Amino acid sequence: MKNGKSKLVLVAGGAGFLGSHLCDALLSEGAHVVALDNFQTGRKQNLRHLEREPRFDLVDSDIIKPLPARLRSKKVKFDEIFNLACAASPPHYQADPEHTMLTSVVGTHNLLTFAEATGARFFLASTSEIYGDPEVHPQKESYWGNVNPTGPRACYDEGKRAAETLTFDFDRAGRADVRVARIFNTYGPRMRADDGRVVSNVICQALAGDDITVYGDGSQTRSFCYVSDLVDGFMRLMAYEGAFPGAVNLGNPNELTVGDLAQKVLAMTGSASRVVSRPLPVDDPRRRRPDITLAKQILGWSPRTSLDVGLRATIAWFSDERSDASKAPRAPTMLHGAVAARQS
Image 1 (cartoon, one colour):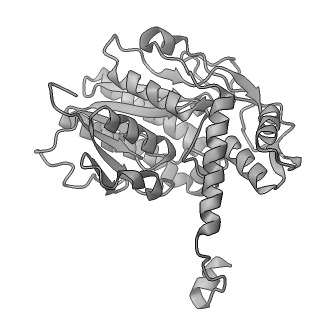
Image 2 (image 1 turned 120 degrees about the vertical axis):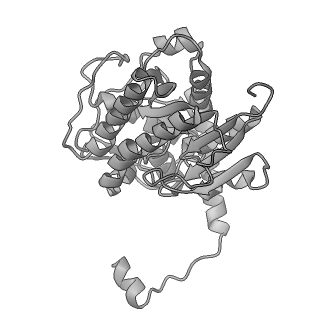
Image 3 (image 1 turned 180 degrees about the vertical axis):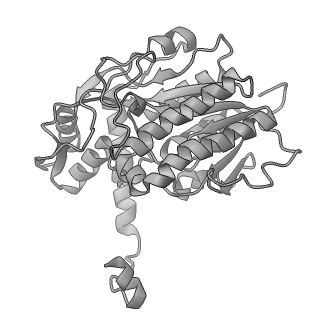
């Protein structure tokens, strides 16, 4: 609530994994939410439970393009704008690297100028990927990173670095009130099975009885934060009224090797899948762990969900997804003519 009225909040990327959970949290606090998504990686089914919610609207649009006229109307005044609009997993952001870069740069600029015009506070969902393959461990916000600017991950890594630059330039110029979160590995219900992230990969392969793919020797580490904890951090950072903190790390500082994660999921699912090794992708970080001292100090925030609890919830969700998919009518398998040619 703001001045006794419901806040009007725009969530770009609102149909995505993180965005849909954020929409739920905002609505639970009484806000009116407009979710904007181009459905490149977001899914309408993530928001299906909100179809009859009177305080929720869904707009099909791409932030690279001018925002729809009905959002830019002088009668519409947003209080907050969350920019979560960008493919975030390597297979997805590398599928169209030009669009990934433009989403972070052009799209962020479009939303920043809109925030300036409407007087809304602006939130950028940045990423731990701006640290690249870090040479400092754990990673503090003051660390400038070790990023390959021309590699296959650069469209995302450098795109987010540029988005941060734009956001802080708007702040320094007094053009927008901004908040920036650097997100570390997050998992939970509504992840896509095909997103290529380690948690979804391992769980889906284990449930299917397929070989579990571990890249490299499995000794590389990640720090996994459950989605509800991350969204709580988003809400606290957006509401923060203290002295400007700069970018803030949000993630779980409990570090785990990828190999140990695979073994944990195997035990939880009772799967007989084998663990197989594949070559480590180019520029894949060897270690990743956030220093969340700043988030603790200024937001009173730290993750509360244990990995075991979070994984059980995520496994249950993927299991239900598999069950629902098996009950759905099968599509025809034969392709004809031009359609078949495009699929070959």
